[in-house]
Length: 119
Ligand SMILES: [Zn+2]
Image (tube, rainbow, N blue to C red):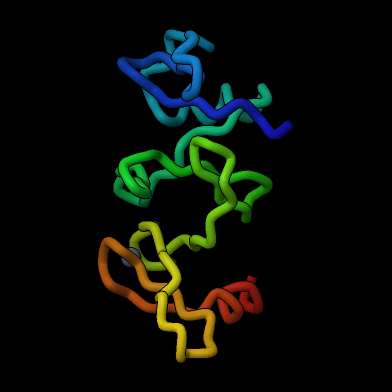
């Protein structure tokens, strides 16, 4: 069992699956992140502008710093765009033997293997 996935609505955090109130009185992302750090919950991933990642209409959650999962606990191969913090999806080119990731927001292409070496 991973951390509880939550979404924020009007300054309160709700369990994404059950819609159960987890905590209210957290109007800002900073306060929500502080709360998340002290509890076993995961917040939706946002880009540098604070916009939530959306994959097939659903928010995306980051677990253990590198693993991305959907609301339904499906592991997804995504990466964070180094430019805008947007969602990078793998290019579905069956003929290309690469790990090329493309940001859905700014179109920036990057290689996750390179990103990992740099960090
Ligand atoms: Zn980007």
